[in-house]
Length: 374
Image (cartoon, rainbow, N blue to C red; front, side, top):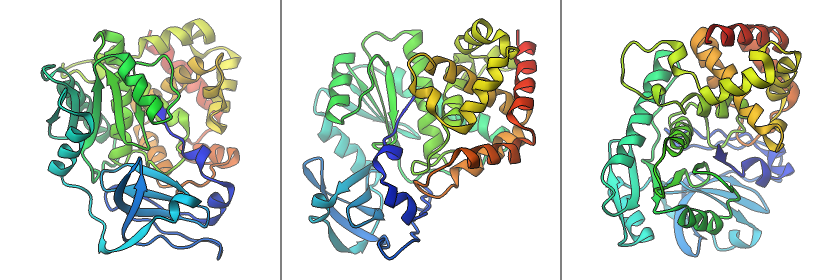
């Protein structure tokens, strides 16, 4: 489950005015559009956000709003009033160094927390918690990169260390959600695309918490290593399908010889057996077509669980049975124009162009695959 306000915050004029592409390996933005839009500067900006002066680069610069990437990798949305305090500096944009970012996190969270550095992460956690959390994040990320690479997915290392914040308990985590205006009740953790952080808590480490963390860590790896883009409206069946894929411990285990059925998301499989006769019911194909066309099923209280499970089935099938199509659909969706609308017609057309069949025929393939896993 990702926390992303991109599709909500961006205005209609912004969607019409530009098609910048942000690739985290190069941090570039190209703007095209009508005279009402102005080009983003490649230089460093000084701006006020979260109550302090910060520095970054403009991704989008419109009359009434600006989207800025700061030196720590966080995305900020500045309204018309906040834009008045933006100042262009005579300097080029450079991401913060690992040490600079580590010191900033230590200052942000205080002496009760420690910031541990791993090969790919900066992990903020209460002091004295050992290496369990850093090990989990590293193990999850390395398994993600290995799995994707073996299926031909292009991996591009991001410019920023990935940040994971472990709060002492759920109350502290929800307090941070409230501070950041994140409305995510009853969760064990999230990946926030704006802050580019995974946030979870250590108030009772259970298998279900670890499962959630693996899901969110997969999102973070995908959005930081070029599998998805943080400034593209990726269809949720793709992004959440990948998150579901990496929930099982067996997906990140180093145990050799695991079969495809050993890596099944059992929660998703159980729901599909119960609600869709393992994909053989007519409703399965209809739901799949809905997911390909838009993200509405993820917004309904009665349909969200089904949306996650069907997304898992679709992406797991592609990854294990059609890896070329799996890699192609990830590449295609990650390189869409920045913040542009992704219409139902375009989503369906892209799907069929990559997979080679319509959603109805694809659902039959997935149903057969699910049957083979039981």
